[in-house]
Each structure stands twice: as structure tokens, then as C-alpha cells.
Image (tube, rainbow, N blue to C red; front, side):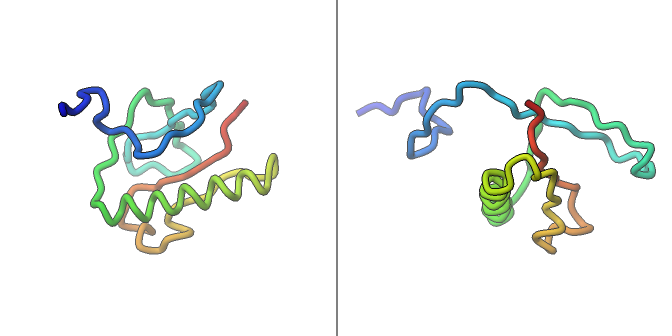
Length: 102
């Protein structure tokens, strides 16, 4: 049996397709500026270079954020990974989950 060449990277379970995509990715280069002088730019792509253990921890964080978003509705604003998981505080780039603008 030949492997399907288009199945690489697919999840082992199926999800209902999203009807619309609200996700946007923003970022900025670390230029040593104070936060009030930083203007994030919308990005077309990101590359997350991480260990398998870091990816597991980040996925746990994302699941908690998704649960909180659903529970809190419009009152949910944003959460920093480093505030929830201290191993990511200080030595790693900032990773923030925010509510999508609809």
C-alpha cells in the first residue's frame, strides 16, 4: 500500500471545516524599542523553531486559551505564554494569544 503524498502533516483525526478564518498573525522584529514605540505588522507566515517538549507545552497553552475564549466570550482579551508558563518567561520570544477581530 502506497502512502498518500498529500497526507503529510495531517492530523490523525478530522475536524469540522471552519466556515470563515478570523485568525491573523502579527509580529515585530526585536530592535530594543520600548513597548509604546512598537507597531506590530501583520505577517503572512511564521516559523516556530522549538523542541518537541516546547511544542507540547505551547499546544497545552493554546488549548487552555481556546477554552477560556469560549467561556469568557467578548470579555476575553489576550494572554501571554510567559505569564502562564514561567519556563517561557524572559528567555524566549513573547507569544501572545488574543481574540480575533471579527
